[in-house]
Length: 179
Image 1 (cartoon, helix red, strand yellow):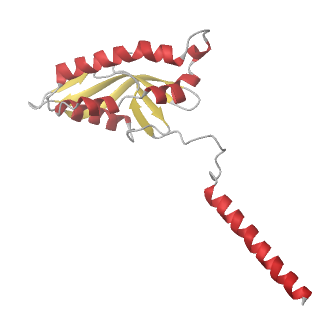
Image 2 (tube, helix red, strand yellow; image 1 turned 90 degrees about the vertical axis):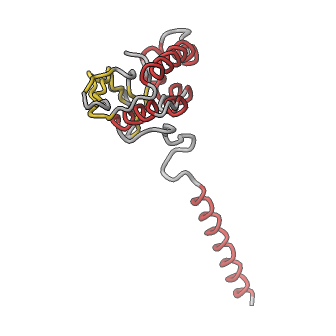
Image 3 (spheres, one colour; image 1 turned 135 degrees about the horizontal axis):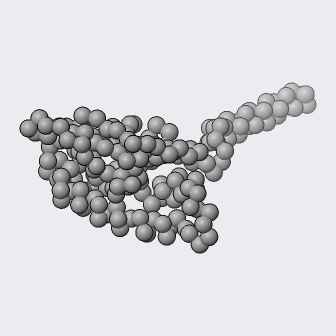
């Protein structure tokens, strides 16, 4: 009888251990190290061309909110971009200070862009960038030129925005101002 009870006890303990392990594995972050969230850009586009097309659509519909969402946020800049920039090593230069200097220029350029091109229907022909800078985990596509076709069928090369950030397979505007 004692052996029978001991066998039942072992089964109960084994089932409890398996249950705890299953629960722990089910809630664990998988292969990621705890504390390392996925590097995700909100409202990112799958290509730089898709970013340009979204800019054109936001301008056509005069949707300033949509245009604003295409730009990296303060959190994205400070979390993903700033840590890899050489300027982060300058004493007393913080991400917040850089953002506070950078953000008003972006707002002004965004408003200027909307005032100049808002309501106009453009078709994206192509996007070209004069160069790029590669960092450890991201790339900045610099001096983008958007070739558009207007409603009369004529093509124009425009500088509608500044650099485009590529983080993995995610793309967003790094700035509205020309770089």
